[in-house]
Length: 527
Image 1 (cartoon, rainbow, N blue to C red):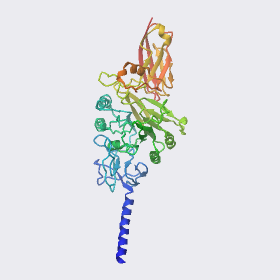
Image 2 (image 1 turned 180 degrees about the vertical axis):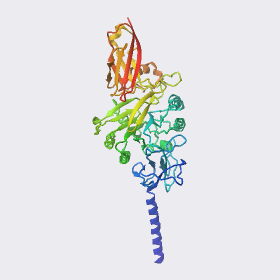
Image 3 (image 1 turned 135 degrees about the vertical axis):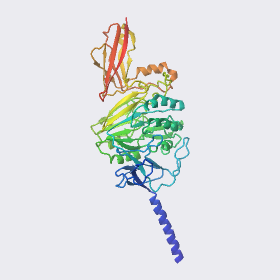
Image 4 (image 1 turned 60 degrees about the vertical axis):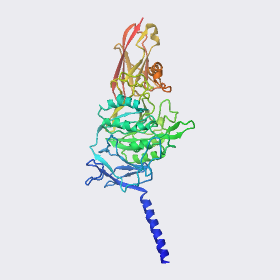
């Protein structure tokens, strides 16, 4: 009887110990601390930081007075920290922020492009060091969409045509807004080395061409991206701005024809994380959302792959915040929209929705310029380039910079052509492309130093410049790269009373921030 009792007792104790270990393994805990020596390890004397958000991609916990946090954990989760404005993330040798721990004991499944190596058992303490820094009352961010090189030659174009220019600028952060690659994920390593020349943190957003297409749906579609950059959604603060990086690529796997399929969705798990995150954000902050796929695409909002289909749920979470800016890419065009009541936004302040220029323009296609780089004009007639955001408190200003062209080049007079006859004067129209224009822009023209006259913005119109280029250099473009309608074309009738001779046409635009730009064209009218 005694032997039986001891056997049962031993089984019970073993079971209890195993159960206790299993329960312990259901949580991750650790500290967020000031990395005073910037060694990446917590040294004696490094104090904990209280009130810092730590997340498991779903829940959000605040650190206590000692910097301690505790969160539920499952396998294949990423633990990450949200940087307060008074701190900076540590960077690796490639200037990629280090703010996460990948918990994936078995690593990634076998895929065409490598994912995460097995991480093994969860450490007893998962700690995050942050570097103390003064809160920046003003700072600069450079944003752009779609670098999208498909091969090493196109990565050369990106290096020479965009990154070399960015390397000469002063910025506090750089954010490529997805489609970092064009399906060839083996280029991530070289891309990262090129971007390290910028000497500033680079926050990479995931796009639909940055995923593992051979994964069966969403679960393992981000393994290579994760290997290089960690979580595909997260947040951080700078100044009085709360940045939220969103992953709105919902991958569906291959269709029956063998083509990868996706739609724009944020999905419930991530929406839940955003809700938990925003609970700890002051309502006077400027919220800046950064994603690849637009919330809305003018004239193309009926395509599930060109917009975020569950955006209304996001809007509900943003109702308490008066100041919201969305930055995206994906469409290879520039447009500004102001999403208010007609989009389900109840807050009287609309969301400023800005789709940024693609660094690759029209996918690195088009005639070569004098430097041997494709002109790669976007399908809306705008040059490839990037945007410079200057944040002051919870406000901001923004300016588009065309790559390889003067900063003041913001307008193209597309028609009339430079030379036409007096008999053709009634057929002429003044049509201008204000590259970064919006419904809040004012555009005027004058001829021969006469009075300025307002021009009419067209809701959606093609760029005649790109249409002509596409026709003239047909062999320099892929068949599917066709003109698309733009929201930043203005027009006016050409004054019919003008006599034959030389005339100076000037166009002036003032944007929503009060910045003014002028473009001039000399016209010759013959008898």
